[in-house]
Length: 385
Image (cartoon, rainbow, N blue to C red):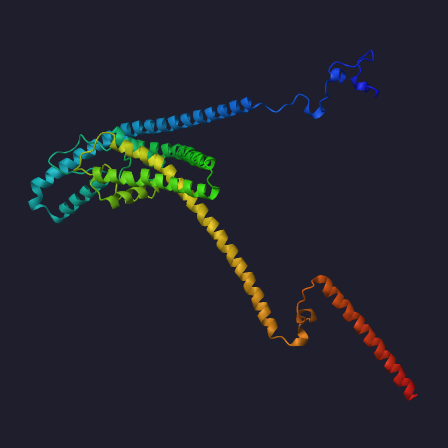
């Protein structure tokens, strides 16, 4: 019998509890008390992480829209009164012109045109028999649309704050709103990417190849985004704004890419009647469309970078091949005495072993020739003597 280790003995020389007595197996010291977590625990942790991620996403979306709603309310409170006064002044200017346009001087006509242009640039259109003072560019729907264009950095330029309070508030609203918008777009982009990953996982479980899955998910992302954020909205703008379909496509892309020329803006035609919260709906479309087109631009950037790497690699290989061919072409015109003997010899099928044997044979042959030369030289000297 093998003796029991001292570490396993209790005070009276008996095996300690939890030792090897009773057929129990001794655990390694490093694994004591550490067992791999069961699958149920891992599943619970994963579900808990997913729930916390959903909660964070929900809080972010809620906070983002609350920020926009508060900004819209503040812009409406600061700018609506000043705009109403400007509309009344434009209506009075129009009425005075109609009463005295037959005997206006050139200077008065120039001043009228200047005032009219300034009013139109500020969003006041003195068109029609009524003054249109009831319709405001700073109602809640339009204010929400303006807040969305500020944080998304589109900036059409057709609507802007004119009061000092509105301009100062716009600075601080954009200062904190633009970073919040970036975080929001990043989270929405992750959600869209997760949908593509789920689609790819579903196709992989069906036995599809990875390259085909990648192509199909990319095609799904592009087709769905173009349909939801470009094609259908353009049709909607064609009906609502009276634009052509190509103008709707042009406006949608210029808006979502944050170029924002300002030549086409929704809800700005005075001769058309828009439904309530029309521009609010457009603002929501802009916010989610920005996330999609940001992912699209990142994808195109990755494709261009990969293409550039492939082109550079191919050019590098072509350069190596061209350098090798130039060197071999130059050696063709070298004199034979400048070309190494190894390159003059034709290649043999035996490989390196035969090369070594041939080199050894050549060296032995050279040595024998030297011996024969010295021996003949000795005989010649002896003969002369």
